[in-house]
Amino acid sequence: MAGLNLAAPSPDAWWRNGVIYQIYPRSFQDANGDGIGDLNGIRQRLSHVAALGVDAIWISPFFPSPMADFGYDVADYCGVDPCFGTLADFDALVVEAKALGLRVVLDLVPNHTSHRHPWFLQSRTSRNDPKRDWYLWRDPAPDGGPPNNWLSNFGGPAWTLDPVTGQYYAHMFLKEQPDLNWRHPDVRRAMFDAMRFWLRRGVDGFRVDAIYHLIKDEHFRDNPLNPAFVPGGDPAHRLLPRYTVDLPEVQAIVGEMRRVLDEFSSVESSRLLIAELYLPVHRLMNYYGMDAAGVVRGAQLPFNFHLIGAKWQARVIDQLVREYEAALPPGASPNWVLGNHDKSRIASRVGATAARLAAMLLLTLRGTPTLYYGDELGMTDVPIPIDEVQDPFEKREPGRGLGRDPERTPMPWRSDGANAGFTTGRPWLPLGRDWRALAVDRQLADSQSMLHLYRRLLALRRQSRSLHEGAWTPLGVSGNVLMYARGEGSNRLVVLLNFGAESAAVPLRTLRGSDASPLHVWLSTRQDREGVVADSVFLDPEEGVILGLVARDDRGVA
Image 1 (cartoon, rainbow, N blue to C red):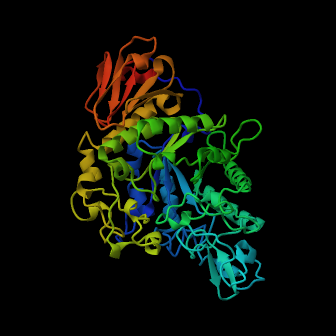
Image 2 (image 1 turned 90 degrees about the vertical axis):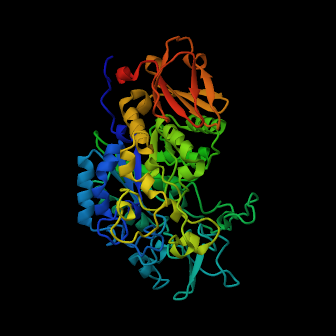
Image 3 (image 1 turned 90 degrees about the horizontal axis):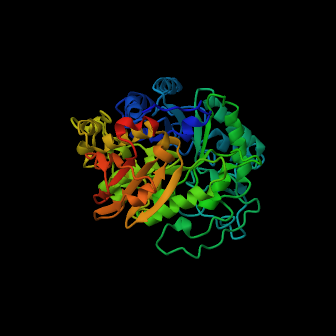
């Protein structure tokens, strides 16, 4: 069969067709023995990431910080916290990543700073200070309490009284994370300059944290009660965030950020803007920022987290993907996420076998998938003893199961020795009890491991034009089996995902249409089956398969 005949790639091809891998730096690899992962540790493990077959790494915050929220409270947007290394370490990391064919995306945290950021320290010195309006300061309510009823996402009021000036400042997260006033032009200029600082150092884009929080109601009106709130639930959801989240003015800021990135884009490569958003699909689409000609001028990838919260059922997933694909504006590209540093790991949510199915789902849907470090090993949430809890969310709301430590535990690299090869010191969070079985070295030695499944899926995705840029066509649901096709004509691949706890059979006549050619199994989550399928595909419980009209040895055209 003929090989691939691809047209010259567009500047967007690297992210439209690529895969992003999130690294939580504290937990990836510790190079200096202090128990905390660092930039040099990431450098040491880049070969693992490159061999996995992804296209870019997204690194969670490593900027100078008091670590009240482990780097999401930034004290300097243009530096590296000593616990992670130096700017020279970062520059070396970028050079090595690029040499391995990996792009580098950073986490930008623009909604708030640390309370120890020089901007805020200056802002709180006087009501008349030039930086006062860089933050959201308000007089107390008539009773002396907070100015309105806004709630912090970490529990309690979103306001803290500053005794120095007698006013409250707003913080949608911890009191150590005062919110910036993005209506102030100097705030925008300062943040855009910080973006340029990193872009000049070779960064390929940003994932923007809490981007839909950037603008708050200019009249500071109370948020309404949430009629769906259930007592005992997350207290931050007691109110509907009508005046604190997703205000229309945010779109202009997203467009401005995109223009900063475009200053550094070229005909060979565009810079990528990813927006962190937990929104319904129809509101998510606004963040693409389409212009009159149908060109994306906002975020190329407004993060789509809907798979994380979806019920793990074939019909639910089928409807979710259909809805998302149908809502996309012309020219926009989809993206999919199964896990991150804020959500329970996929293997804990659905189980070890279903996590293999989830891997096939993520890497065969159309668009840009993002992987969370350790998911390629099948890592699960690790119970954290109360005296070892690190997450401020859990400390503020103890016993409610809101903590994020369980999904942030260290990566297990080696099955021999102590601490899984992550550190020579004491890990900042405990390892899971199953770290030896999940370790990278042990999985590399096992051809049926989760790691090898991810490698095979990613290799197939890269080799197959149908998978990395082909159309997505729903084929419906048969019992508990989700069915869809990628690509067109003789190059089309068919994906079958059995979400059920029982075996299933899918007649090929429902998949082939008028073409009576036999289908070949290209890849199974079971991994030990290939060959021709004549009449029906038989699937084990929670098994997924990829089928093609040609044998895998002839897959060059697919």
